[in-house]
Length: 198
Image (cartoon, rainbow, N blue to C red; front, side, top):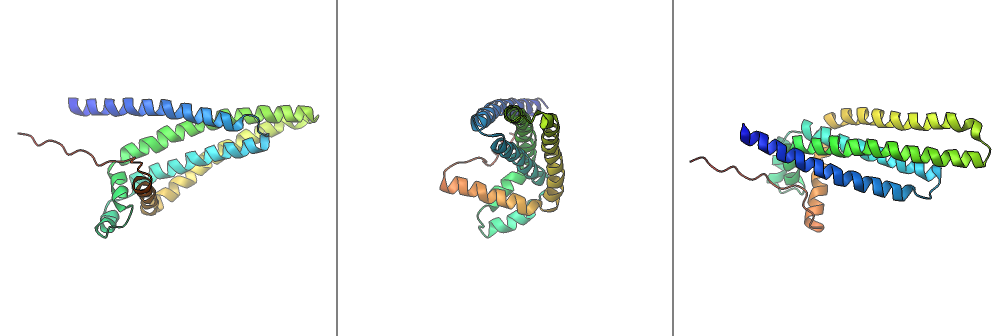
């Protein structure tokens, strides 16, 4: 029981640190991209951030819905990505936590901040063009569309993830295989075997 709590605490601390670092990176990158660009390009960047959150949400849900069995058959035939897909399903709780909670929540926060920046840029643009009468309406429409795409996209994504979990996790496995074999970037590693009790 004590070992389980210690392991959970270690994972929670690690994920908190990872979230802190990724949130800082997302914020810096999005701020740099939005700096000096038109509100139209800014909208595109916001939608890209939203899309990122939806994609990772799909991966997180698919990891919990997928079964190992199909991947074992692929791994026996040495299909690239199958071994990584098995690792994903075996670590579904951590994968889902990272994809849904870490990346998903960060995307939501950053997209909200980015939306505010775009609205400010849009407001300044409209004031310069004497279009302040439409300012309030467009602000409401934009923020509402971003919220609708975030919630609606995740709802649609969850349904797709559950029904196509094997395909999705296999594709992620292939991506991890490519990163590991071609770029030498290892994101997942097999869990260490527990020591046998004497």
